[in-house]
Amino acid sequence: MAGSTAVRRRPPVRRPPRRRSAAVRALLLVLAAVVALVVVSVRGGGSAAVATDCSIAGSDLRVSAEVAANAATIAAVARSRGLPPRATVIALATAQQESRIRNLDHGDRDSLGLFQQRPSQGWGSEAQVQDPVYATGKFLDGLVEVPGWETGRLTEVAQAVQRSGFPEAYQQWEPMATALTGALLSDQPGQLTCTYLPDDASGAVDPRTAAVAEALRREAGPAEPHLGGSITVPGEGWPAASWAVAHASRLQLASIRHAGWEWTAGGGWTEGVGDPGVLTVQLTL
Image 1 (spheres, helix red, strand yellow):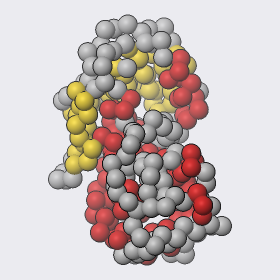
Image 2 (image 1 turned 60 degrees about the vertical axis):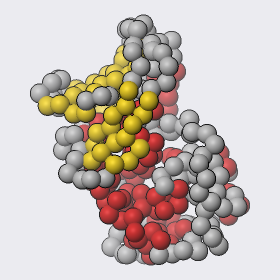
Image 3 (image 1 turned 180 degrees about the vertical axis):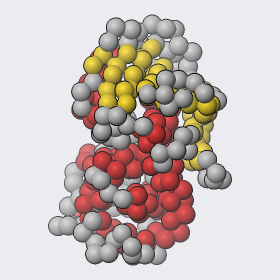
């Protein structure tokens, strides 16, 4: 990493996280170019949903909703910087080795977050390295400074950024990272699907609509709440839809429609429904 190093003498301590990260800082980073309209409808609900898992079309790989959401954030940050898919592959493989793509609030010595970055080694403050967007950005800052990173052996490139005590450990995760990247960045329909059990919605407009709109403004640009609990923001196709699916459990998405396809929390993707020119996301909060 430019201007800082993170030296690790032993692998991070792998303990269950004490709390689940509340940060949704990558909110619709994949929606940078305005080529479709996203409509978010916010409704009232009851108790927390029960998350299950996520799968990739044509692959046996399955990941938790937490992992899928963090992976989608990593892919969104890399994509927003105009980096090729190889950057996402390397970042995901690195995060898998360091944290199992979980935003950890603990680790070896002062290591924290998705990439187990150490504040004492100049990666940022404790809060910053536990912010998935910031942590990914810092990793990518270092990645693009590595000569030949786009074609180099994954584990050697990752090691040049991380400076781990176990430099060969990253290589084993390349197939997994490649499969995840393919699904998250694909412009083909239904490449990523997640299932969970959503709350029953009462149909009442949730008073947090304005707060959701404000979060969208911070991450995705102009976002305006409307009567009935809807929010409009810019959007850009299947990578955006895959991002929404990956974050569905965390954001309590009941359905997603795009390009004649619909995803639902319990049923996955179905073809033949929805406005082909609009990405519609409905939340149950």
